[in-house]
Length: 330
Image (cartoon, rainbow, N blue to C red; front, side, top):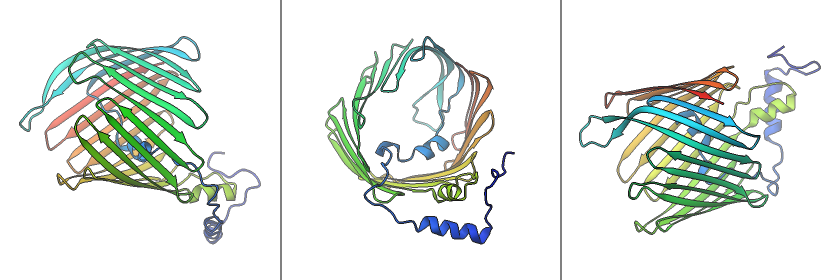
């Protein structure tokens, strides 16, 4: 039965479980066999997944048709308002609608994704594994509007216990990052960039700590146990940005997250708390931040290959309210 240990498993008491945790925690660390960290650009991926879903306003319909196991076509229709910049506190919106056609080729070592919109924009993404350790990522956008076309290429090298990335972009943009596992749980890294077009440069440092002690305890006890994983990250950059995040997986289906962002040059500060709840046929995410903005995002599976999406956001400070709904087929 669900929630019960398998036959023959030993259920430990509180004292025995605590002793087991200490034994797992005191296990000798092999510093010559540390795990490979995640890419520098994905340091806060758990917090981003919980706190920053793809909110939208209006109506959205997405249809994907697979032609074979590797190739598929997609059609997307969106109708909703578009915000325009304004000098005052009010938000100006104009109604818009567009259609998007896409083609996708997904292979274990090669991914090609292309999109074309009715407003003239063309986007493309490429991911190619050149070797087992070296991968290439590229994305580009072409547009009729001035200064809206851009492109970027990333090279990602995965070592035994480190990762390094090199970025090349239009406008004389150069960037590099490096992240190293210090312990089985702690990773430290740094990045540098140079934007030649704007004559700006910067350097940043980051740290990420993961605690999976409860995962190890469950394996040691041979019983099913929700992994109480928590992840903490911190980043600081010469551009003035300080960012911190914390994610706690309180059960197999529920995660709580919080983040804090502060710019010591402009004195802007934002803090937010959120949740991520995965039900049997739905996923619900919500967030509340210090600017008085509350949002929620619901994805529900109605049937195999048919999903219903609800998006809502309330900005009390700006008196701006957004609501969106959509269907995803395929």
